[in-house]
Length: 480
Image (cartoon, rainbow, N blue to C red; front, side):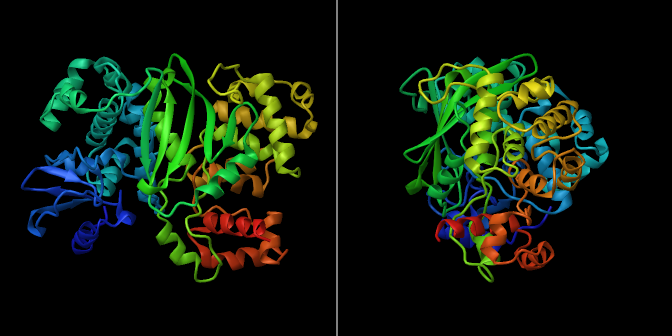
């Protein structure tokens, strides 16, 4: 674990600098409470402050979360180094609820490392054990649900990953010196019993209009919709024994540096996973200042541009393959036909959300004739079936859990998947900040260069943020 510069942390705390939100937490020894650096409480004395890179480390040393700044709302961190990435891949799986059904040995197997190695790396990088981290994540999710929803306590416990109400109550009281009902009495109530509302923090600036333009142009008919700077989509979350269906709505509250999320109550038990996926889709781990400092030295940038991620990796990868050598509009049309033909019909309050996107096992069992009848070439149909089969078998995993180099290799091993497609999928589905589809026609046009080797050489100066350079280059074409 990298040591924090405590003097710099204290200065950031004194100025409530939002750029440091989520990068560290402050434990105050006089109150035994830990906060975000943007907390508006009275600034504690320097000698009373302890600084932690993750919330779990603060809780492991006996601090409990501040009820005002709510540490569970802090944005996450982007990581690049191998050991850091492994630890954060494990943390991502834990946040997705992996340990609710399987143990640490299964987690290590999923990441292709030994149990012992994973435990050591996790402790070294994040400062706490895997179990301590998992407990903190469950408790912070529970705290959010208790504060922001009217879900029954038992439902809160189950949605947070606890197998029993008794264990939930005991750990909550042990860590926070409160009963779950204490927060429930103080918390707000939702206006409707079929909708939950949450806020997800980000580091400003955030160029929201460009995100909406990008997603809107690629929105799959029936599955996604962008209107009046709001993003809507249907949702299908697969669990161990069931699939939950519903919808989400996302808007930007710039004055508070948060995205406001509305979630249908049908997704109550999947809320932690829904919120985690939305953080990836909207790139909320991004530190724009750090990235722009690198890019602005040699590239005209637009402040606050994010790299759109993926709510569902297979859906995004399918959309990328459909987009090979056709227009954005044509790919969108084909994806909409797939949803209508092979997805699940869904009733929502929104006229333009009618289906969920088909899962990999559905497409893997399709014939080339079935897919090509939608208007795509037979070669494209065969590539989609190959992708779906690889995802279903586990040979390709389309999310941040997979090593990027291995993922790109596995993708390019598939017939019909080239370097551009693999890099685009890495940029979005794998949230890889250094992905760079250097053969892209838009990048060639923006740079005024057609030689791929020269383009790669030019991009060396944008490492490790070439995905953000890509977004700026694409954005520059829109300004012409």
